[in-house]
Amino acid sequence: MPMKVLFVSSEVFPLIKTGGLADVSGSLPLALQNLGVEMRILMPGYSPVLAQLQNLQHLAHLHHLPHIGSAELLLGTIPNTSTQVIAIKAPYLYERDGGPYIDAHGQEWQDNPVRFGVLSKVASILASKLSPLKDWQPNIVHCNDWQSALAPAYMRLTEQSRAKSIISLHNMAFQGTYPPHWVSSLGLPHVGFSIEGFEYHGQMSFLKAGIFYADAISTVSPRYAKEIQTAAFGFGLEGLLTKRGDEIKGILNGIETEEWNPAHDKHLIANYSHTKMAGKAKVKQALQERLTLDIDANAPLLGVVSRLTYQKGLDMLIPHLQNLVNQGCQLALLGGGEQALESAFKQIAVQNPNRVSVTIGYNEPLSHQIMAGSDMFIMPSRFEPCGLNQLYGLAYGTPPIVNATGGLADSIIDTNPAHIANKTANGFVMVEASEEGLIACIQRALDVFNHDKKTWKAIQKNGMKQDLSWNKSAQTYLALYQSLV
Image (cartoon, rainbow, N blue to C red; front, side, top):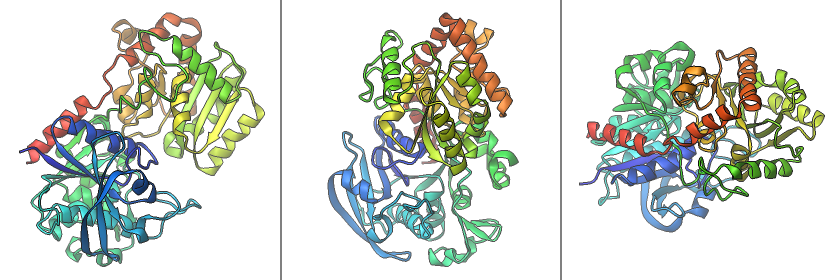
């Protein structure tokens, strides 16, 4: 009998995306499917999701759900794949203008506890005797981040499910913490509202529920599995995580190598590979033209595709950016977030119209073009559970400049004499997460780029030749599933 897994996520690429969770949720299930696992993704039926799913059909009705009473389950497939998605059709919760978590004005939806409490509850029902899907019962419910983290609690406390649960921690900074009245509103037993449960400083915590009740815990990189057991990265839950420390499995993310591959990326004006690099120069010129930067093949083009938040560390770049421009560098930035950071970068762009380009917002084609057309990719995150953009940088021959944290430390090998000699160097790693640490690291990269083309080409090819696919990671997840069942 094949393993059956219900993969629960609040966002899935290409249906809807705000960050790396969507990329993982779109590609990991596909990789597991290729290993013979019967995967079904469960997610909210947001309007864009219902509009894009193919072969959409009625699957079942569910009743006695928190707040909303009933909802319809629809079954469809992700376009151009065989991956099946169960979408929760509850128009009152999910079919509205705005994003998955915030409204059109950037404010968090006030009913997010219901919206994601229902997601978790539906997951637990589908893994129980009460499931209307009698012909498909999961062995594993694989939850992701706080939005689905109540599912293990429901499975244990209300549905008494025999399926096993896993919680994957993509970012401990977001925990889904809400006032205690939501315990009864979401139909959770009050026995769980304690230190040995989902109570957190007088509040109820979705994420703590997942960490406490799940049968297994995974993180998206080996280093992050250790970091979250410290006060610096545990965000108040390090004690519980340390208690379960031996059970936490760190599995580095892969990337979708069909979607992110310079050899046949449909968003690029020219394609290239580690054996035929000429196309990268054409992509750089096309990017400079698109962003009205000076057409200059020799100008070091720094790329940034990121949320503009304290976590991502790009505030450390701002004080040195004008000096880098004065040295001949260019910057292509795509992202958005904190108003002060957006304004600071836009101001520098106004002062340097043909050297600095700042695009606020989300643009998938442009993100590919910046990744491919840039010479180096700037990612100085203060903490980074895994990170995908540095992996995209490796795949596209755009050496990343990173801080030594989480998945960045697990995937980027610093360019130094020893690593150059053993042909493992693939990027540049900061000595410390500071303005001085970042600018020193960028200057090291510029020295190699400007004065040692042979080494530069070598580190580009070292990254591009790596197996960055999900194959190895998917096999590790499958082994984890099998150990539970």
